[in-house]
Amino acid sequence: MEYIKNRFFEKASKCITEYQRLKTEHGNKVIANITMEQVLSGMKGMPCLITDTSKLDAQEGIRFRGYSIPELREKLPRLRPEGEPLPEGLFYLMLIGELPEREDVLNISKDWATRAYVPQHVFDVIDAMPKISRPMTQFSAAIISMATDSIFQKAYRTGVNKKYYWDTTYEDVMNLIARLPRIAAYIYRRIYHNDDHIEPDPRLDWAGNLAHMMGHDSDEVKRLLRLYMVIHSDHEGGNVSAHATHLVGSALSNPYYAFGAGMLGLAGPLHGYANQEVIHWIFEMIQSLDTEEPTDEQIASYIKKTLEEGRVVPGYGHAVLRQTDPRFTAQQEFAAKYVKDDNLINIVNQIYRVAPPILEETGKIKNPWPNVDAFSGALLYHYGIKEYNFYTVMFGVSRSLGVLASLIVDRLYGLPIERPSSFTLGGFREMVEGKNAKGSC
Ligand code: CMX
Image (cartoon, rainbow, N blue to C red):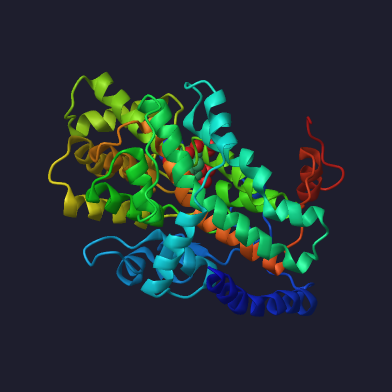
């Protein structure tokens, strides 16, 4: 699929000059002030990362190369008119910066199908772990075990010129993305279906093949997974999985290591693991209230109890967003269109009515609205993927599209190793209170 790679190079290489020009002509310009609040609250809002694939707006939500989710659902090529766009098309858009033709998307599908072979030792690594290992542990270990195949790493060893790093990174990234559905499905079938594995079908698209290999081979599940893979793919550069991939990649670690680091970040409950926590929390609530159909008042009291216990309400809040996540809305619309009546989805919609005012009342939660994870589990569950401890792996498969497209871009621009400065608490105190200020540490 040389032409996709060439098209990327043609388009993106113009930006290398732009990157260099900004550095030389504007290197000493001040672009923002950093407040103590930002330092103390996880660097929120500091403009310090270059990510071209997508941009997040607090009110509007995510745009991928300028396109919102509703626009993508309208404009990206799909297999059938009534279906959802193929994630392959979004990968093309994120990498190259322009909407693909249908032919481009089908070609990426074919390319990934030919690259999808997973070496035996990767399955051996997975099989060596106890089945009770978390799916994300097995997934991350499988990913880093593939570094044996890294073309980038081999080229680096042989002393390739740094201006070609992007080329071997591209090859690793395409191989890695192509293999992820097979690896995810293998873990799923291993844990939940007694090692009864299903071979990939090379005629299927990337998301369709994941559904097939998981054993959920209906058109409905394939349609859902295409939507799922599109909406979870990227959320600009500062979220933990994207930033971790970029940071580790900045040391010129191979793409398998960089993405493995990103996946370990995604596995945290404040990030991607929240999609499992949402379902766990709802089931806990149903059990505690002793009813499958709780009233609004019962849900409100359970949310208050969760807050009183010093726990988070999973699926709600966001570090950047200050409105309902459009990824939540896309799934809600999907459910309204295709799902007639489902108890879990009804409860998710009920929580959406009840939770925001209660979260707002706390006075400290900056965003009382739902994020992507508030809806995704209920949809998967409805379509028969009920093993919710697996859901973060599915998020991870999707997240590869954005963070690995970014890694290719990082290498083409020749972005340097990332290395911000740290200070002691006393050091920061001195900055705001002066040299003579006294503190207890
Ligand atoms: N439930 C309870 N408390 C919450 C909360 C929630 N849903 N969201 C925020 N808060 C709390 C924070 O824990 C923090 O409390 P302290 O001051 O006691 O430390 C306070 O409100 C302020 O937090 P914030 O500035 O509004 O939010 P942050 O940017 O620090 O954190 C996030 C963002 C997503 C981690 C947080 O909203 C949260 O924990 N949500 C629940 C977990 C979740 O759904 N994560 C998934 C996010 C999407 C994704 O990455 O997949």
